[in-house]
Image (cartoon, rainbow, N blue to C red; front, side):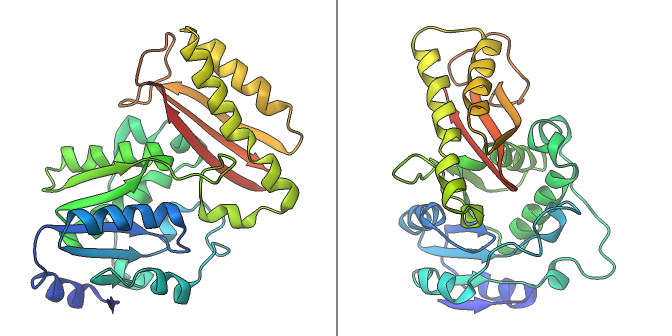
Length: 275
């Protein structure tokens, strides 16, 4: 495993890597969710690049960019099977004259986009840059960030990027909480309360399995359940088309049920696809 910090060196080494090339972009502070992507990418590709970059442009002015958890030494120890760990600085990705941005339209304006204006402009731009630098054959993302996966698939399709986007299932704690770097912010009581997200998603799945087709009833039942938890405050409870992210009136197979909930000051997201 070699650590690379500049675009020039990454491009030079990229030319020597045997195709196909798997790529796992991360913001570090790795957990088993990240490592499931790394394992899959390693199994499917003779070459593997993992990036660690906390992208400042996807954080709002009152969000947690400066507090975002990091443990580089631990991360690198977990990435011994990668060929390259790409760790650029912010100045390397966004030099002083940088002024170009990637916008993705309506799918980036709903849900997380509505709650976090500008978030997906930052995500789409940095992912497009990383794809251009690394030139992967396949790039791996987690289903937990479902809207992010939709946005990334959209830019790959619309901009005719020559790679495959692979989305893998959410990895969960034994009690169902989706693994996330931000879980480290939770104190003991908040960690117990955070399970309400998974409970609400399970309720949505149960209602659907029992024949409920009214999306508003499912949204309302999830909301009612979450509101019983005193530490929880809902940003949104959504039942949407999995491609357009438009809210549904009538639920269909494949609908994306997603949540954003603050537990204290910690904002968590999660989702399930109704099958």
